[in-house]
Every structure is written in structure tokens, then in C-alpha cells.
Length: 302
Image (cartoon, rainbow, N blue to C red; front, side, top):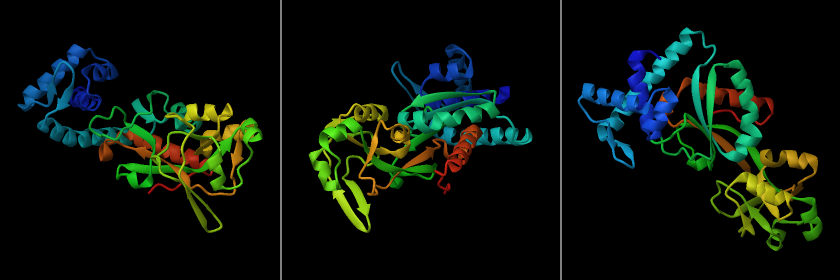
């Protein structure tokens, strides 16, 4: 990006990260230089864009308005450059926020092919970033498991996976295989992170629906902790098939109540900047969609 546009690019990163230090590090300048550049931009505009205190920084109303207007301009400039170069290799840096369970099992293995094609691109991985506030988001793209009703216009459905129940062989030897959803009441249940928000588990089979309120013997706020608990024999876990397919294939975990449908877990790509999203973020979304399609896990983007 040319020198004239650098102050605007810097302002956008300061606004999104909420930090001169992080923004200056991303862009390869000193913190003092970043502060001077933003101060000069404010003098040129004749308005204060940021309110700075010793503990925090926030956009002024004028700054919020300026951010909303300048981001589409920068995105259009980036898009024009990319098109002029023939839509070839992407450059720069992608800040990618991903939930840990999804990242380890599904996303990171698909990242290497993208980076092979775009060899000068760098990626920052941010684990478990909520990315729900577009103003303060520190990422260009977030991959989130959320309820469909929470999806917003700037989110795209990437793929889904069946929700399943699994337990270790030694647990099932000790406690027995449940024969119905109601039988789960007598079992130790592991509750992992879920977009269902503590709502009852829903089961269906042959037109019959069952709703079951579950109390967790173990509650974990990270997928890998819940998975480790299940592998150790602590109980029955409800999770997405992509989180436990390797353990099922190896026999470390066994499907429970396999004939019952528990619905799907859906993965969304969230673009905090909306229409002004970076070209590289949109390109990676397309790459993921293509890769999931090859696995027969693809759901068409809306």
C-alpha cells in the first residue's frame, strides 16, 4: 500500500486493536511514530478521532464515522490492486480468529495449501477470539460455531458436522451402553463448549423427538479438555463429529446412541469489517469452502 494511504491504514488497525503498540508492531513502525502519524491525521482533519487515556483508548463519534467511511475505500484500493495483478498471489498479513477445537481438527490442516499458493502471505492465529464486536475486533476473519439464529449478514456458513455422543471403551465396559436418550440420566455426562447455551439436548429418530435436560458431571470450556476427559473414561461427551473422528477411527472413542439424530454443528466465517473485509480474508473463506467441498462436508454459501 502506498505511502499516502499508510496513515489511514494505521488508523484502521489502531481502531480495531485498541492499541498503538499492537498496530505499530503489525505495520513495522515504532509506537511513537504511530502516535505521531495519527496526531498528524487528526490535525489535517481538524477533528479528534481517538480518546486516549493511560488505561484505554476509544473512538470518538467522529472517529467511528471516519472508520466506517475509510474502510470501504481501503478495501476497494486493495481489491483494485489485486485485480490489476491478475488475482494472483496475495500479500500482507491475515489475522485469523478460530476456536481451538475447530482449528486443530479442521482449519489448520487446510491452511498450508493456502499459504503454499500465497507464499508471501503471513497469518496470525488467534485462539477462541469472540469477534462479535466489529469495532474492537482484532482479527480480519473469525471462524465461529454459533447457533444459526445468531448469524448476521457479515457471516457466511462454511460447513456443518453431525453432533454425536462418544465415550471410551473402558467407560462403556464400566457403565454400560445406554439404549435410549432417557438412559443417559444414569450416566456421567461431559459438557463441552457449545452454541446451544445449556439448552436441553434434542434427539430424533423415525419421526420421534426427545428432549433431555442434562447436568454435566464435568463441564469444560475448551473442546480439547472435554475430549481428553472422554478419552480418559470420565463419561459420555456430546461433540461434533469432526472433533472426534480420529478417535472413533482408532477405537479410542465409541459412538453412543448412533441411531439417534442430534442435529448439526455449524461453522460460520465472520467478517468483522463486513463489506470492507480484506481481500485475503474473503479469499481464505473461499479456500475453506472449496476444501470442505472436497471432503463432502460442504454446505453452499448463502
